[in-house]
Amino acid sequence: AQSVTQPDIHITVSEGASLELRCNYSYGATPYLFWYVQSPGQGLQLLLKYFSGDTLVQGIKGFEAEFKRSQSSFNLRKPSVHWSDAAEYFCAVGARLTGGGNKLTFGTGTQLKVEL
Amino acid sequence: EPEVTQTPSHQVTQMGQEVILRCVPISNHLYFYWYRQILGQKVEFLVSFYNNEISEKSEIFDDQFSVERPDGSNFTLKIRSTKLEDSAMYFCASSVLAGSTDTQYFGPGTRLTVL
Image (spheres, rainbow over the protein chains, first blue to last red):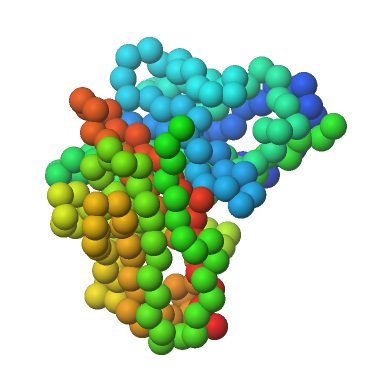
């Protein structure tokens, strides 16, 4: 069965500093990988996804993530954090369902705090 | 930009009561999902629904749960007899299969509190 580990429960960074959120996955086949963000009172918004091809993927809001098969990792990065990036970030791995669609398995999330 | 909507945003109920959580998926989407997140825990998959039937369900999704697409727009999750441990945030998601990729778009969630 697939699983996702996000080792950092809380991270605090200063505005303008760089950010890296860690994600490790376990999945037997080629993984479909996602990063979602959840602001208070909001749903889960997709930041970016990896299905195949280029291992460095670009997403919305200036985020990027790099898939490293050898390390089973899909870390999220941003070169310069803005105060509005404060939110909870979830990494997920998707498993194809027989009838189509994906079943997502989420990590526990990383709460990002941005200091002004 | 189209989005998934959910109602109500917060539902409070007594243990043993039935609740129905409602979702309106994005209009051209074909796959529908329910997930839940108990406070402080991971977001967990409950069920997927395609072509008017369940395509997969988790072990959490027991006989107390059911899903339905009663018309062309709504997708509902019913909990027949709520328990205290059903208190959670419930998220609806939808996706459209486009080749080999499939991205789920989530609604804002319904917070269910069982007293």
